[in-house]
Length: 361
Image (cartoon, rainbow, N blue to C red; front, side):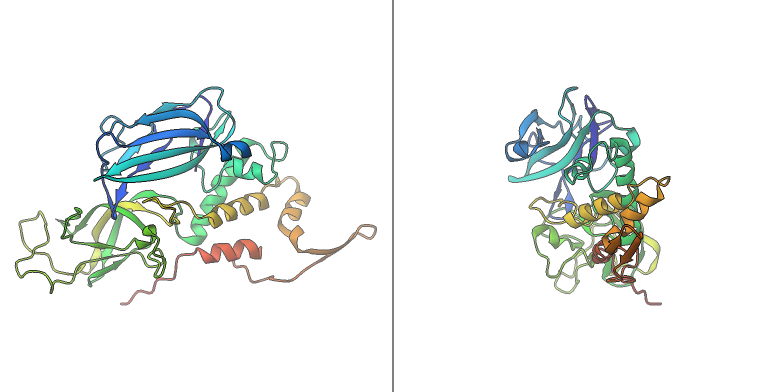
């Protein structure tokens, strides 16, 4: 989630807010002239109900505002007003592809100043912490940004997943079967190779790869996020002269991911996101919550061990006798949490951990 400074400028060369445009599991370029965005101020409860326009409807130039060489990746080009309100804002993207309209919303914060390295610190916003009572006298904007970055990275390490859309170029070992299991849930693919053979991914009647990302269309039983995979189609229903559309001499590929070391290359957009009606999804609300809980737990300065102790163990206090300075703690849930010993945090982290993978020899 992004944090922007007042008066900050976003461009294709230095994007502060960006969009990926998937369709049916592939990254695509939207219909010409259809990709647009509007930025709203939602920094108060009243504005959440009736957002104020900060940047009016703006059309994205699909050539000039494209980011890098990947298909379907564009920047929002704008300059925030220097007197923009501090707090939560929202960008609303709209576009069409082959006549179908899509909408995607992203929350971000506006702050007086933001260090470059902390513009995209993690899974919650400073305004989220402010909304839970941590005002500027409790923690500064800069320290809040650093805590969010640190604890978001901790969530990634524990869960072995990422919870936002991220472009990745994966080198994978061929499985020796028609199915290739991935570590990260799939949002959309950009390209795929087996060895030197480029697979045909265009959205037509025949596609070389079945992409399992049905959760983005609301199908959660089964939930493809828990077993993200790609599958080569069974050859038997296809004509005898069917070929994969490889570019390495016209030879047909075998209907399997040939077993080898890092011989499969997959480039695309990945991340564990919750379906929200868009083709991208959003960071799960539980991940935002656990990031805030971790930030609150680590908010006390190391120079103040008493505050640090309170932050981590106050929720276990069952009795305090001030005159004798006696304190009793509950042992409920003690030892159940594998990561922080805070059962509320650890149960959420366990819920989102990547399932154990078992490899056969």
